Length: 331
Image (cartoon, rainbow, N blue to C red):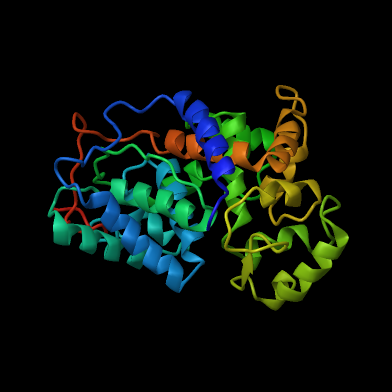
């Protein structure tokens, strides 16, 4: 995805400003593997690019996996652990996410060049960044140095992940518990410009009556894809962005919000007001819609910031897993 040279210069300037305001989590650094595994990031990038070339929906899948990982127990690859006899209810048993097998393949490729050096938590962070490069056309440095966690607890998923039915204040409170603010919320919500969801997350806004904040023509088209809950079809896939290219990460999301053409309550509520923020998030939606280059830079900064949530580093209890779906002492 080519970008005009003048736009690249502007983006780099915005990116520098955005990233300069992001404090790096303790223990993370740029180029963490430059000495111990110099091929690490290139290996991840090459595999991810190939996967997205074969299946363009995988870009959003990797970004979503990273988000889910960081919002539950921090960015420690706990989302990737399979159930075991001693822990039959891991995070991945609670919600259907795509990309687990893909991450295992990336890990195998990295292990082939550097065994037991690069953590699965860092691989997931790199894969999310490289998905943005492939699907959004902009690049940035992702700090690394995370360790993989030992635990994965199903009950913690719905305590950490914001619901698509959340109203604005609930979203702000949820993000605040992770050290993220209103701007991070609005900027990261732009990831809903691409990828897939399921009808069961959408039908509450369609039946028995259409949510009045949803564009009527948009709702009528959605009803042709998502039947009423009593008729089944909850797991029918539907594109997050039904207005333009559903596999391109862009600021189109903000145009969709402004026109009532988004799927989730948690998206449309960004246009609401709260006693503490007023119409601040609505103004951010308008600004990100009007300034795609600025949004790219903000999105990069917010991804780096999110990637520092409750990380485990070399002074914390953690490990570098041999495989991403199991701890090194499986039990």
